[in-house]
Amino acid sequence: MVKYVVGNWKCNKGREAAREWFAEFAGLYRPVDGLEVIVAPSLICLLPLCEYVQALQLENVSLAAQDVSPFPKGSYTGAVAADMLKDLVDYVIIGHSERRRYFHETSTDTANKMAESVDVGLKPIVCIDQPYAMSQLTALNDIDCDEMIIAYGPVEGTMSRIPEEPQRVAEAAGFIRQVQPKRPVIYGGSLFPDNAEGYVALPQLSGLFVGESSLDVKSFVDICNKVGDSLKS
Image (cartoon, rainbow, N blue to C red):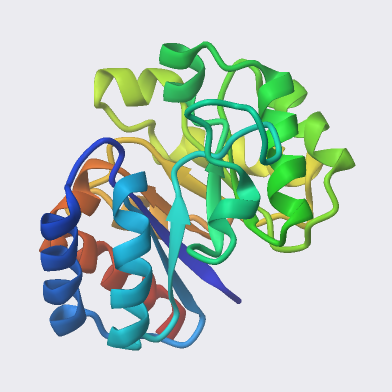
């Protein structure tokens, strides 16, 4: 069994702060067989971090982009195409509720981003929420990618900073697995070291999608350790 911990820095940390984070992380992180750690820094950090993380030789640690253009390379001012990211990251986050809320992204945008990413070999981390889960999941049927990860995160949990109860997360993850049985499902929404264990223990989940807590190295490593310990038991 493979489990994932994804750290999404969102719009935080410049190049120097990002490098300092990984330097500290390298001293605290202890790899565990079956645990995949994925970190999504800001776009401006990807090039220097790609080279720095490779030099650190961190086992089972990958970088992700927080977003990608729904279009290929070409005359799209301000966009970053999947083909431009493929040498910097292994994963890309697609369809986050904040992208839909603040940038008015549509289901069509999400589908196009998935298609562009998969075409160049990037692995999508596709965000799913209620009440649009069924339509979002149905859109995945046309995407041929065995390494896609589904990240479930209720919008109200993100906005209120109150995590959804583990029982409700288990029900939502179970529903997602019925529709997409071959995809690993991870949960994100106000996760911290003191509440992570309740979600790590859920058999319906394959890991956690961490936002604010990923900005603090020690908190993020603590969560990674909790997920790693679940693989040892």
